[in-house]
Length: 131
Image (cartoon, rainbow, N blue to C red; front, side):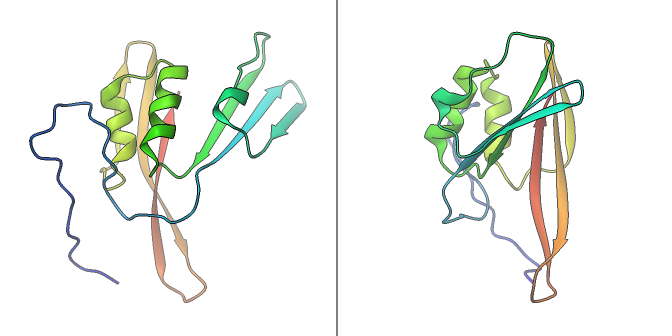
């Protein structure tokens, strides 16, 4: 377990610049969409960005993005869902502290998820929610 973490800095870059800060993950980014309507739940896995068309009916769609280390994917998601550049910057910073930000049309929540690995070590992951 690391007691001191070396934090990556993006010194000199303007606010809203997408730079991944935190542990680099070798895995590819995965995108899964869940569409809830009444008692029905439709799940679509391994989506590409162009496959994320949101429904126009009364349903609710949850988009699960596994991995935020590829800035081109994060940038495309931001454009598709009209997310503020500072919100995207906070998602890319996986060393972010838990917080809640109120953007006029949505809420942004950052929290930490704790789990135990097979080697009985505590694993900390960032969860970012845009509501």
